[in-house]
Image 1 (cartoon, rainbow, N blue to C red):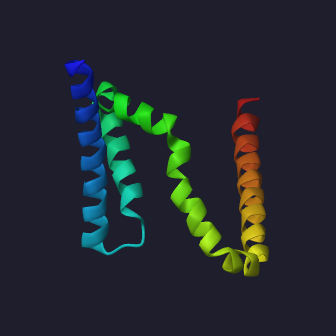
Image 2 (image 1 turned 45 degrees about the horizontal axis):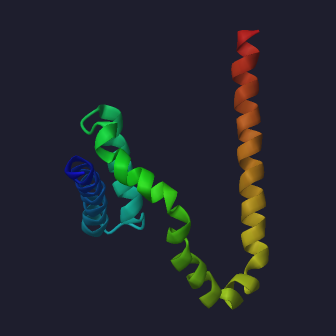
Image 3 (image 1 turned 30 degrees about the vertical axis):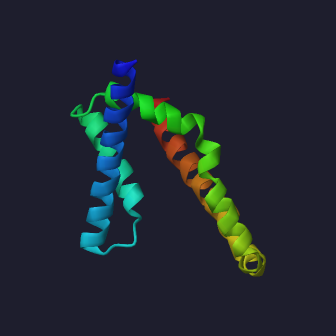
Length: 120
Protein backbone atom coordinates (compact mmCIF):
# COMPACT_ATOMS: atom_id res chain seq x y z
CA UNK A 1 0.00 0.00 0.00
CA UNK A 2 2.81 2.41 0.87
CA UNK A 3 4.45 1.74 -2.49
CA UNK A 4 1.18 2.49 -4.28
CA UNK A 5 0.69 5.72 -2.33
CA UNK A 6 4.27 6.75 -3.05
CA UNK A 7 3.64 6.17 -6.76
CA UNK A 8 0.67 8.54 -6.67
CA UNK A 9 2.65 11.18 -4.78
CA UNK A 10 5.60 11.04 -7.19
CA UNK A 11 3.27 11.03 -10.19
CA UNK A 12 1.29 14.00 -8.90
CA UNK A 13 4.49 15.87 -8.02
CA UNK A 14 5.92 15.44 -11.54
CA UNK A 15 2.68 16.60 -13.18
CA UNK A 16 2.34 19.58 -10.82
CA UNK A 17 5.99 20.54 -11.31
CA UNK A 18 5.46 20.69 -15.07
CA UNK A 19 2.26 22.70 -14.56
CA UNK A 20 3.99 25.18 -12.26
CA UNK A 21 6.92 25.48 -14.68
CA UNK A 22 4.48 26.21 -17.50
CA UNK A 23 2.68 28.83 -15.41
CA UNK A 24 6.01 30.43 -14.48
CA UNK A 25 7.11 30.57 -18.12
CA UNK A 26 3.76 32.03 -19.17
CA UNK A 27 3.97 34.66 -16.45
CA UNK A 28 7.62 35.51 -17.11
CA UNK A 29 7.20 35.84 -20.88
CA UNK A 30 3.74 37.46 -20.58
CA UNK A 31 2.38 35.45 -23.50
CA UNK A 32 -1.24 34.56 -24.19
CA UNK A 33 -0.63 30.79 -24.35
CA UNK A 34 -2.05 29.25 -21.15
CA UNK A 35 0.51 28.03 -18.65
CA UNK A 36 -1.23 24.67 -18.45
CA UNK A 37 -0.62 24.11 -22.17
CA UNK A 38 3.04 25.04 -21.78
CA UNK A 39 3.23 22.66 -18.81
CA UNK A 40 1.75 19.83 -20.89
CA UNK A 41 4.31 20.51 -23.61
CA UNK A 42 7.08 20.41 -21.01
CA UNK A 43 5.80 17.10 -19.64
CA UNK A 44 5.42 15.69 -23.17
CA UNK A 45 8.99 16.74 -24.00
CA UNK A 46 10.35 15.15 -20.83
CA UNK A 47 8.51 11.92 -21.63
CA UNK A 48 9.70 11.84 -25.26
CA UNK A 49 13.31 12.59 -24.37
CA UNK A 50 13.19 9.93 -21.64
CA UNK A 51 14.11 12.14 -18.71
CA UNK A 52 10.82 11.20 -17.04
CA UNK A 53 9.80 7.53 -17.42
CA UNK A 54 6.15 6.86 -18.22
CA UNK A 55 5.80 4.87 -15.00
CA UNK A 56 6.42 8.03 -12.99
CA UNK A 57 3.29 9.78 -14.31
CA UNK A 58 1.07 6.80 -15.04
CA UNK A 59 -0.80 6.48 -11.68
CA UNK A 60 -2.05 10.06 -11.46
CA UNK A 61 -2.65 10.40 -15.20
CA UNK A 62 -4.87 7.31 -15.13
CA UNK A 63 -6.73 8.80 -12.17
CA UNK A 64 -7.21 12.10 -14.02
CA UNK A 65 -8.48 10.30 -17.12
CA UNK A 66 -10.86 8.14 -15.09
CA UNK A 67 -12.50 11.21 -13.50
CA UNK A 68 -12.04 13.59 -16.44
CA UNK A 69 -15.76 14.32 -16.71
CA UNK A 70 -15.67 16.01 -13.31
CA UNK A 71 -13.00 18.39 -14.59
CA UNK A 72 -15.47 19.72 -17.19
CA UNK A 73 -18.03 20.82 -14.57
CA UNK A 74 -16.43 24.25 -13.95
CA UNK A 75 -16.22 24.87 -17.70
CA UNK A 76 -19.89 23.95 -18.13
CA UNK A 77 -20.92 26.31 -15.34
CA UNK A 78 -18.84 29.06 -16.93
CA UNK A 79 -20.59 28.48 -20.26
CA UNK A 80 -23.99 28.75 -18.57
CA UNK A 81 -22.91 32.06 -17.02
CA UNK A 82 -22.09 33.40 -20.49
CA UNK A 83 -25.05 31.85 -22.31
CA UNK A 84 -26.23 35.10 -23.89
CA UNK A 85 -22.76 35.89 -25.22
CA UNK A 86 -22.63 32.42 -26.82
CA UNK A 87 -26.06 32.93 -28.40
CA UNK A 88 -25.05 36.37 -29.70
CA UNK A 89 -21.89 34.92 -31.27
CA UNK A 90 -23.32 31.57 -32.40
CA UNK A 91 -22.84 32.26 -36.11
CA UNK A 92 -19.13 33.22 -35.89
CA UNK A 93 -18.48 30.27 -33.56
CA UNK A 94 -20.22 27.85 -35.91
CA UNK A 95 -18.55 29.36 -38.99
CA UNK A 96 -15.08 29.10 -37.46
CA UNK A 97 -15.69 25.49 -36.36
CA UNK A 98 -16.98 24.41 -39.78
CA UNK A 99 -14.47 26.53 -41.68
CA UNK A 100 -11.54 25.30 -39.62
CA UNK A 101 -12.58 21.70 -40.12
CA UNK A 102 -12.96 22.25 -43.87
CA UNK A 103 -9.53 23.88 -44.11
CA UNK A 104 -7.89 21.01 -42.24
CA UNK A 105 -9.62 18.42 -44.44
CA UNK A 106 -8.60 20.18 -47.66
CA UNK A 107 -4.97 20.59 -46.57
CA UNK A 108 -4.81 17.00 -45.30
CA UNK A 109 -6.29 15.71 -48.57
CA UNK A 110 -3.82 17.73 -50.62
CA UNK A 111 -0.81 16.60 -48.58
CA UNK A 112 -1.86 12.95 -48.65
CA UNK A 113 -2.48 13.12 -52.39
CA UNK A 114 1.01 14.50 -52.92
CA UNK A 115 2.64 11.95 -50.59
CA UNK A 116 0.75 8.93 -51.87
CA UNK A 117 0.96 10.10 -55.49
CA UNK A 118 4.78 10.10 -55.34
CA UNK A 119 4.83 6.47 -54.15
CA UNK A 120 2.88 5.26 -57.21
